[in-house]
Figure 1 (cartoon, rainbow, N blue to C red):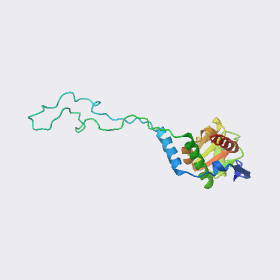
Figure 2: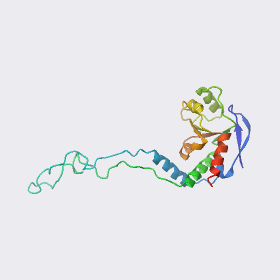
Figure 3: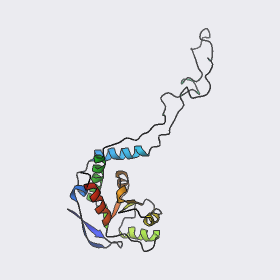
Figure 4: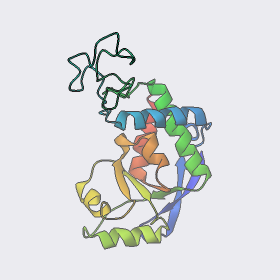
Length: 210
């Protein structure tokens, strides 16, 4: 078992918490992580870029001049791609950039990232996260106590709109329920702050995958 310190919202160490080795001390596979992040970003692309081919631009109905006898090159349309105002050849068209990867790869990527974060001491575990009053300044104080004010990702056991409203006003901060963690958000934040319940839920879900 990997042991990490357990903190309260005041930043005080209140004990230790055991993490499962196969999840938080797994082999780090950078290739799989790269593939998963590429897939995540591809899914986010709108794919709406579009150019007009010669069949879509206006004009071009009549032959510009007769075929022979003018001394000029043959031309059948003034909307040829080689003309100014002509259509585009092989330009981008609306498309779906998303692609799928096996679920086991997605799970392996999450384990790799979590293991790397633990190795680099970028994981903080809270005994509980309860706000007496839903004020952003209260959450900022908690993050300062934990030395995690710069781009933290707070992972809780289940969706909590009160915490989400408080955190969304903090630049770079984000809240996710344990069921929605993904490789991109784990990588895109400097510190990962978990509640005990969130860790237990993640370990339960990831263990059920194999």
